[in-house]
Image 1 (cartoon, rainbow, N blue to C red):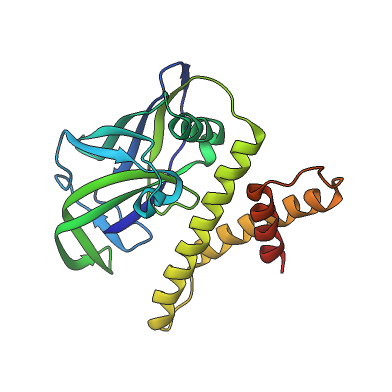
Image 2 (image 1 turned 90 degrees about the vertical axis):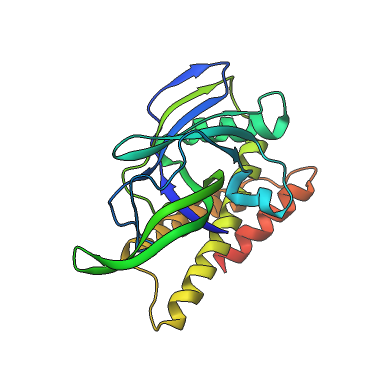
Length: 238
């Protein structure tokens, strides 16, 4: 199973629905994975789950929603609904809504049919037919021209829940960055300039958060989640 990560932009929101509509692939454009997805790559009307944050449903966390895929001449659209009658579905959706234009998405797929060739003078993989298993909110995107068209929600989100969602997302980002870097190092390459700059921005925000944590009074009770989050911050800050 491969994954492809995408940037999305929240366009509007409504209340009480728990629905999301997102453009998750733009055709005939090279993404940062050196792939070009062709029109017709996705089966119109195909179902797909919404994974827990960072594709973690593959490791056992419950899916948070489901939906279907449709295509236009230029892009693929996912229309889904979060499981708002479950805690994991409602919390994930609220994170997606409140993250807004910073939210990124990814989808897990099997490349059923593909070929290699040249695109604008570069060697790329042309994705001709894909089987999508799930879409997932993530931290770092790689797609071009993707966006959330609508996010219809049912309310706010507790600070502790948001912190736990961010922690899970940062862990997923770290795992992804390590995997990508290892593969590129095998080819004698490092991360691209854009990816390096984005990771530097994430690191800077984590350091800023760590400074806030360090200046705050010690809590009376430390939960397992808080201990894990603080451990991650200390590790990140070195």
